Length: 282
Image (tube, rainbow, N blue to C red; front, side, top):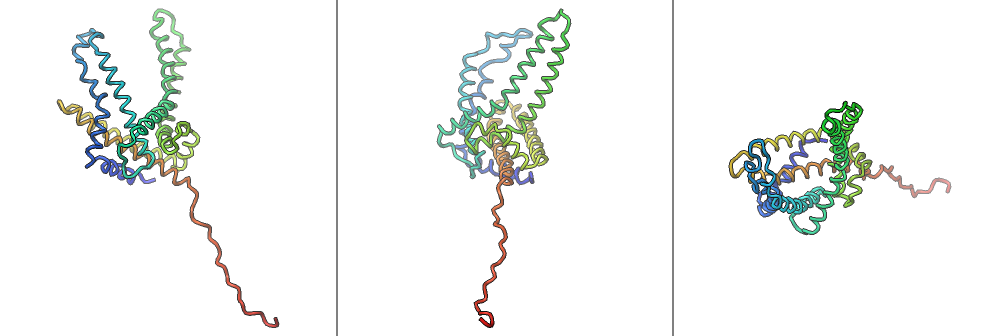
C-alpha cells in the first residue's frame, strides 16, 4: 500500500469539501462553537487566587449548558464523518439532519464500547493506587496491591494499543455496515488488517501520527495569537477532521479490495470447430 497517494487524495478531498463551500465550512464552525465558548465564561484569575481555589467562582450552570449543547451538536459532525467513512465522493452536504444526528450517536456508541474497558481498568488501578499511597499513610505498605497496580498499567497499555489498532477501522466498518455490533467485531477487523498487511497498516498509522503532530503544532501556534487565535483554530479543525476521515476510509478500502474475489474469468481453451467433411469410406 502506497501511503503518498492516500495522503494526496485525503488533502484534495478536504480541499474540495471546504474551499469554496463556505456555507459548509461555516456549519462546521457553528456546530463546534459552544464547546469553544466555555473558555470565556469564567476568569481563571478569579477562580485561583494564589494558592486558594475558589469553587464558587465557577459558573457551573453556564459551563453545563454549553457542554451539553456542544455534545449534542457534535453528533451532527460525527454523522457527517460517517458519510465520509461510507466512501461518499465528492464530499457530502449537511442534509438529512435527523440521519446525521442518529449516525453521530451510533458512532459515539461504537467509540464508547471500544474505550470503555480502558476507563474501567484505569478506574480500578486509580482506586488501588489511592488505597496504597493515600488511604493508609501510617500503615505498612501492602506490596501486593502495588504489584496489582503495575500489572493493571501493563494491561492498560496493551489494551490501549489494541484499541488504537482496531477501533480506527472499526468505526469505518460500522459506517459501511450500519451495525454497531460490526463496528466492534474484532475478528472481522483483524481480517481487514491482515488484508492490508500489518506492516503497511502500521506505517499508515505512523504517518498519520506525524500528520497529527504537525496539526497540533500548527494549532498551538495559532492559539497564541491574541483575540483571534481560537477562531483560527476552529477554522483549521474541520479541514483536519475531513482529512482524517478520508485517510482511514482509503486505508479500510485497501483491505476490502484485497478481500474481494477475483473477477477475471478462468481461461477457457478455444473450441476447435468440427470438420463437416465426411471421412473416406463413409
